Image 1: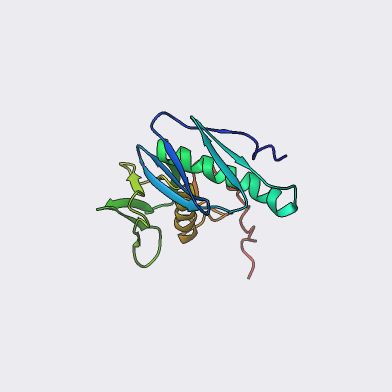
Image 2: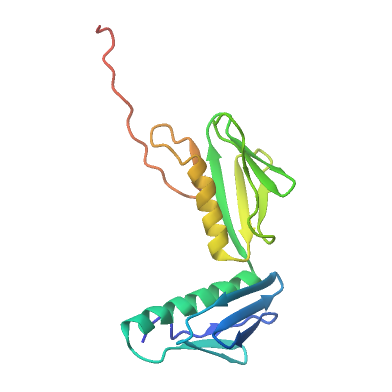
Length: 185
């Protein structure tokens, strides 16, 4: 039995889960509503304030889907109850972020400012006063993580000076620069 899959998911007080035919699961909570289609072979039982995921057989595919289904359901429950946040930091002279309306504008050494529009209505940006850090928040963990990765790809941290966009707490190993020989021609 999958260690992850067999653990029940505890439902907080204001969160409701409904399962339609074909395993279309709807999770509603104080922050919003999420829907996702799961493998129809998995059995999703809502009993009181717990959700359990059961698999029909021990086939390889069913074992793989068991833990995945439970993990995705747990993320949906946490998302509609508390939400997810991802903090990024900007390092570099002249690099900064600002919020214009609901969009995020980055000045990161390109010839133009880079603008990011929230891909979903529940996604929000919070920018620090100094413009050196910002937070992406939303109810869908996958959307928040993918948006953070896309923003980081605009200017990933470079290994010589450490300039760029990085996740909070990310360690970037610094390389030694060139050791030039002075005076030779």
